[in-house]
Length: 132
Image 1 (tube, rainbow, N blue to C red):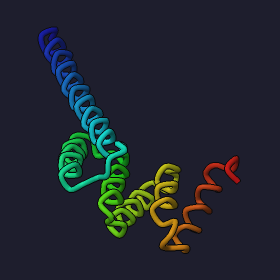
Image 2 (cartoon, rainbow, N blue to C red):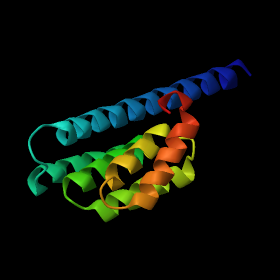
Image 3 (cartoon, rainbow, N blue to C red):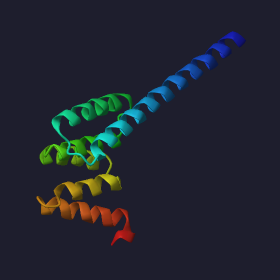
Image 4 (cartoon, helix red, strand yellow):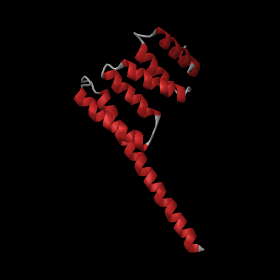
């Protein structure tokens, strides 16, 4: 009986270590992709490719909305506004209380789609009343 308990504890410890390692790797990939996207230099195809690869890796390890919002930034940097808006809208549909996603939508559509800007601003005001 003690051997079974000990084996279960060891199994849980190993699983926890693996989970922490995967989360750390995903966070590292997200940080590296964010550094590429946030750099002052223009986001050329050559610079966007490694950012996309890092986000693909991070997304498989940890399917977080932060990865999707970074994907949208990469799309905007590559002048793919439609792709960025699609990605951001998918986040707002999954997480309607995600303030960062609504801000990203307002920024992405600021000069092109007044309906989406108004929708985003309305949700930003609802989620953070101090902004009004």
